[in-house]
Image 1: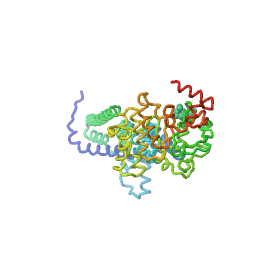
Image 2: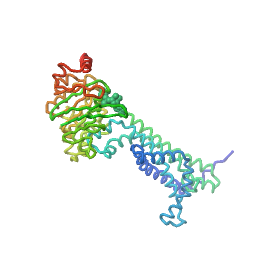
Image 3: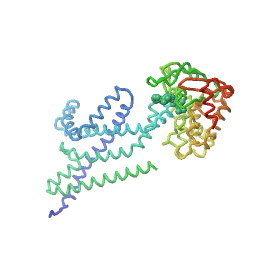
Image 4: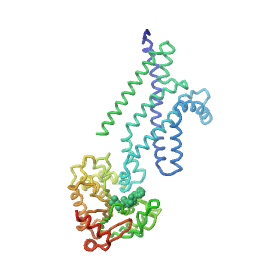
Amino acid sequence: MYEFDWSSIPGALPILAKGMSVTLELTLTAIAVGIVWGALLAMARLSGKPWLSWPAATYVNVFRAIPLVMVILWFYLIVPALLQQLLHVQASTDIRMASALVAFSLFESAYYAEIIRAGIQSVPKGQVAAAQALGMPYAQVMRWVVLPQALRNMTPLLLTQAIILFQDTSLVYVIGLADFFGAAYKVGDRDGRLVELLLFAGLIYFVICYAVSWLVKNLQRKSVA
Amino acid sequence: MIVYDKVSKWYGSFQVLTECSTQVRRGEVVVICGPSGSGKSTLIKCANGLEPFQAGEITVDGISVGAPGTNLPKLRSRIGMVFQHFELFPHLSIMANLTIAQVKVLGRRPDEAAEKGLQLLDRVGLRALADKHPGQLSGGQQQRVAIARALAMDPICMLFDEPTSALDPEMINEVLDVMVELAREGMTMMCVSHEMGFARKVAHRVIFMDQGRIVEDAPTEEFFGAPRSERAQQFLSKILRH
Ligand SMILES: Nc1ncnc2c1ncn2[C@@H]1O[C@H](COP(=O)(O)OP(=O)(O)OP(=O)(O)O)[C@@H](O)[C@H]1O
Ligand SMILES: [Mg+2]
């Protein structure tokens, strides 16, 4: 029978914490960029102008049809060359984090764009007409009437997507970036305690994700009431 | 004040409006009636450019609605509109519903706007509900707030699209009373409505529409006395019976 030995975990906490900070940085950056860029894509798709909506639709559909792992790898192979050309960064600069940030942000934008588009469409046409009838130009109609209602309708979906993203960041192991999962793996491998470290990492992922989805459920209940 | 000159509109190949011409003078109240789908809503939504039209011309206070250079938001801010389904903003309090466009569109100071808002809530008898949200109000109350919201912009005329047809019968009069008062104060009004009692009481003219055409456009007495077209006679006998 396998003997569990948890003794290497306390000493590994600083490394794990550093891994978690990478995970959170990736998650939060991708959420922030994803929502802003996604909102622009959504508005472009809904603009009714083909030269705006067509490229936006293509972007969204392409990214949603490609596995995330491949996007991460491609950006790892492409972004370094680009950065070196554009910014004249030294070849030695570690660009793994930069390429992962770009990859996740662009990839998540496609998903956020769809959520935001559905949110905007969930606001009844009559609301837009009422705002226009009061003399609001398009930007004000969006800012004061449509987006606040859309945001309320789509908050649960945005949070759910954030949870998925949080878990998906573990895929950066393919480019050797030490996120929370990567750090746990390294320590486990080093100490010959892979099972314990991965169980522990899984527990942390579970606790965080469960807490957030509990929050989502409560938000949903509140918005229904 | 509002002049329609041979206005035509198509949805694809389907013609919704066919050469509609009429005018509403300053201080005049015009009621528009007609069977469902005859184009009544479309006709009044053209007046503030909520619906575009392909032929003819509409001017409001001398400004052409369809002309390319017209600042539509600015023009709309001077035309009040009340919808069948109220369309209050559900995420805002009643007070914020009344003040948001005053502040954002007209650039009034928030305290100024709030004062105006309270004054109008008072007028429609709902001052006590200022801090509630639309979802907490009855249909009749919501529609009265919607009228107050439109009036807060100091409009030069008001458009109503079946303001009472989504209401329970017992709430219809509280809304009509507000409209009657408004009409008696001399507001220029264009109302799509099947409330013939209201029409008799305050309308100067009644327009009857059928299949996208203005079939009848007559002073109220004349319209109810002896409508000229057969369609209007049929329609009247149908809705006056109940
Ligand atoms: N977006 C649209 N696309 C195509 N046809 C439309 C559209 N909106 C309205 N119509 C059609 O235009 C016609 C006129 O519509 P409108 O809403 O103006 O009628 P109405 O007289 O107000 O009817 P109701 O009494 O039912 O409100 C109807 O036949 C309707 O089906
Ligand atoms: Mg209608």
